[in-house]
Length: 304
Image (cartoon, rainbow, N blue to C red; front, side, top):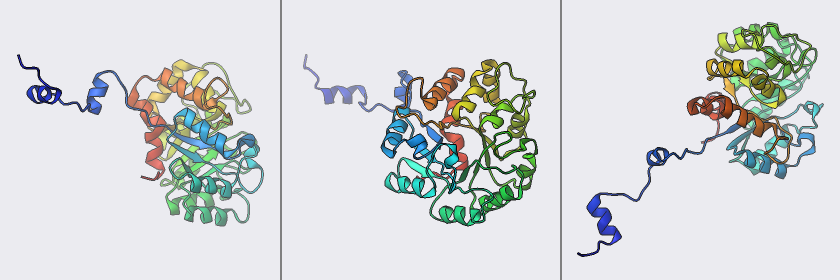
């Protein structure tokens, strides 16, 4: 019997050596999951650019959204401003995109933000300044966001930043074409109908239909940023509630880290822990994909 060489055998049997993505999945191997980090900062607590890049690579992040501070305050964590995020994007155009920002009630706020929108900023924020969330200052920012078709990321913190969350529906109604992203302690505390506003990191069972829950449900232009200890707390304080919360808001939730860690893994890394928690709570890959990248892509124009 003549021995068949490899080419003859493949020809005779119609077998192909190319393995399609479908074949890989059939063998139990998963495609690499795209992760977009909605919430990061330059110079975060003094972390340099190289450590930031390594941190994001360790997380497995494809795109990182850099959120600048205004000209003062550093968002309470010595974070870099518009020039800082712009420079790192220029140096790493396949790793980062950036938003534009300025102190909400500063006389040059709109002019400054618009300057960086014209340079390529893909959103506005992190808005973390001492104004009411339905003030004329936020209205002017929303008008600019509408003009440039970009989202606005809001840090809600009772008695400190973007106060009066119970009135934010007025902004959502006045600017239905502007996508807003809620973030921080007061935003995530208010998934609970019985939330006490002065409590920053509430514990225990959650009663659905809190302010944030209703805003996500009732307004197509409202999204939630799962970053930081506040987002993580919302997922772990009542995991039974969190599973149902994620499922019903699966088209509105976006992964972010807001992490000043320098390693990108282990218990000290908020970003890594949040990825693990989402995957543990939600086994449905299609829902995971929405949270990790698809929802962000719906409202932010990432490079092709």
